[in-house]
Amino acid sequence: MPKPASDAQGAYRLLPSIDETLRDPRALALEGRAPRELLRRFAAETLEAWRAEIAAGRLDQDRIVSLRASGEPFLELERRVAREALRGVVRCVNATGIVLNTGLGRAPVHPEVAAAMAEAARGYCVLEVDRETNERNQRDEHLGDLLARLTGAEAAIAVNNCAGAVLLLFNTFAGGREAVVSRGELVEIGGSFRVPDVMARANAVLVEVGTTNRTRLADYAQAIGERTGLLVKVHTSNFRVVGFTEEAAPAELAELGRRRGVTSAYDLGSGLLDPEGAPPLAQLLGGEPLVREAVASGFDVVLFSGDKLFGAPQAGLIVGKRAAIAALRKNPVYRALRLDKVALVGLETTARLLLAGRAHELPVRRMLAAAAPDLRPAAERIAARLAALPHLAVEVTPGESRPGSGSAPGVALPTFVVHVRHARLSDAELAAGLRSAAVPVFARVQDGRVLVDPRTLLPGDEDDLVRGFASAVGREPTSARRSRA
Image 1 (cartoon, rainbow, N blue to C red):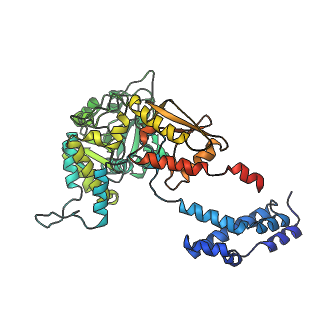
Image 2 (cartoon, helix red, strand yellow):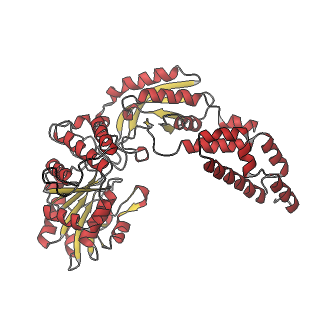
Image 3 (tube, rainbow, N blue to C red):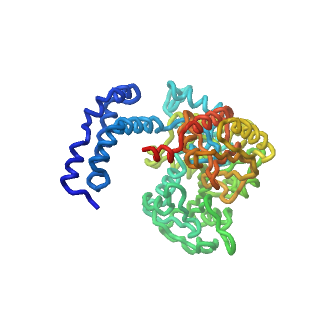
């Protein structure tokens, strides 16, 4: 029941002012951790939240007196400063076992790739100029050559991500025209990214053919008309339709487009390359389509991601026939989507590693290929180190890792995981403590325990993982703090 107006007015009068809050000697000490204007904003937001609580009848005069006596205005200010320090892009430990973890940045790059990117970022670099002629050239020209050699395509370009590549594709070949897509391939992936929505933004008219589970080549053929600009096949990278299914073979669809004079494209999503001499991943990942096979099937354009199975920085990689790639490059939208120097050098260096027969060195490929028996010693070593910390009970058991980011849905990679339980902290509180460590640690929470999967640990991560647990177990349960408040 809302408090009487007189009580509310009294409560409002008891609220400290912003200046009074900032004059607290402890608040003055916070200026070394946050600018004064930010402290002022935090204080204003705290007081505004209290005013809302008073208006709702949830905060009265007695409670405000108690809060002020306990120093809550400063404590809330301190909490906000602490939360601000945890924001932004920082290095973390991925102990989830999800190799391509979108929330944690997807593919970690090879150390040589990281070094090349840092070198390009810190100074000038040869980006859009020919060293021999001193004339301007295309910034991704060399990357295009490398990708063509890797995939067997005639030419290639790159944009900022695969969604950008899809937008550029539809706008170039179906802007103001029709694009034919199977109903079973009108996917939605992470971040509510829907193929039909992108088509609409590209000014393409969607023509759906077939049914959810069965689309035949004849369905595409019947849909082709004077306004058809594009035939599209989309790999359903984040789900599977099973049972009574049928789809047009890639080579048949590409041949239909060639025969009818319509551009054909294959959006692979993750885009798996198994270069010659590299330990193959296709069978391990449940038959994930190979980029080389998609190109060889005859499509004019093949799209795939740079930061998934390719193992490089974020990018949308576009390979295919020379005329189609030239048309994409001429589209003004391409300039809005093109890559910066740091991403470009990362992609070039990754491509060189693949061409040099060093694919097995890429972190993503190494993690995906790791067998459970090879991961068990790391799990047992981590368990022994964590068992030495107070109040932790640990156990090593068989488990499952995941490729992640829509790559090879339904594929589980056998592993060994460390189950961790704290005597007083709940699983959620322990996981929150790990995320608040100096180097944040992300683990899985399952069945009342925190799970650590060594599959996704990089060199040096194990020490930070143990330090994260040491920091987390020093935290008092929030339930205990609430009981004393």
